[in-house]
Amino acid sequence: MADEQQFIDNGLQRTQIDEFFQDELGRAGYGGMNIAKTPMGTQIVLKAEKPGMVIGKGGKNIRKITSTLESDFGLEDPQVDVQEVEEPDLNARIVADRLANALERGWYFRKAGHTTIDRIMESGALGAEIVLSGKVTGARSRVEKFNRGYIKHNGEPAEEIVDHGIGTAVVQLGTIGVQVKIIPPGAELPDDFEVYDDQQVEDYIDEDEGVEELLAGEPEDGEATGADADEAAEADDEAAAVDEEVVEEPAAEFEDPDLPEGDEVEDELEDLDAAVEEELDEETEAEAEELIEEMDEADETEADK
Image 1 (cartoon, rainbow, N blue to C red):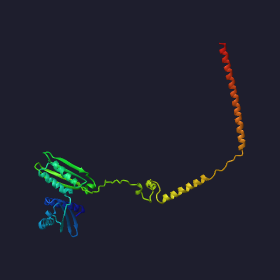
Image 2: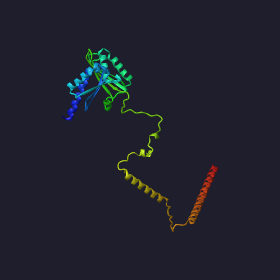
Image 3: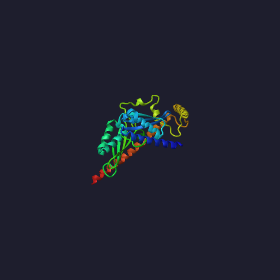
Image 4: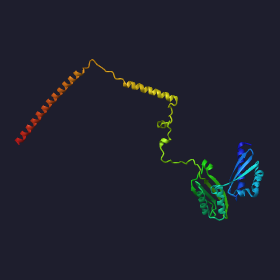
């Protein structure tokens, strides 16, 4: 038999066994099962709200279940272990059966839904959801949902963390499907986080690694790493040292024999300043004389008038 077919057969057999326990142990508060194959046989762990009803008087019921598993389902030497459910209000299958029984007894669906989900949250669940689908109040089918807290609907957390339970209520108007999802208390969700107060950043920095190294990040494309990076750093240090040595050397003095010396330059500058002052004085005197003449002419014109 191919491996794929073996997986399909194992899943089908598991589902059939689960339905068998649901029918036989419904009144005992059946809460699910775990099957594990061992060298000694098949180990089956049953979860029930009332283990005494599963075992029966003198173990009569448990022996009947064991023989049925061998004859009808072909299990080799099944070993059935019954465990009591510590908190039935946190077991989705038990809650779904209770809610279905309440609807069959005539409870109004809103009262039954709110009462059930409140009991779940009071037991410490992180979140819960109840879905009722069918003819809950009339001839038309519809879906009613009751939500509390936080619930996951898809992804790995929805498969591994969320507890699923399904029940069926047969009422006068028809059949009502009951689906229950519960996130148990203490479940670690991937998006959980915790905020610490009065914490210093230095407490979370490695002493051997400085802030500059943390901020440096990963090298970009084309940037040297490892031994190449060390060699490049040494080459940069040597180049920087050479630049510093060149800068520290004093510049050589430049002398031109054709240029005059310092004293001769100062004398020429003084002569040039004196010539400029004489020219400015002559121009100023000429302008003053012209201005005086214009004023005299203006006075004579007014006197004639």
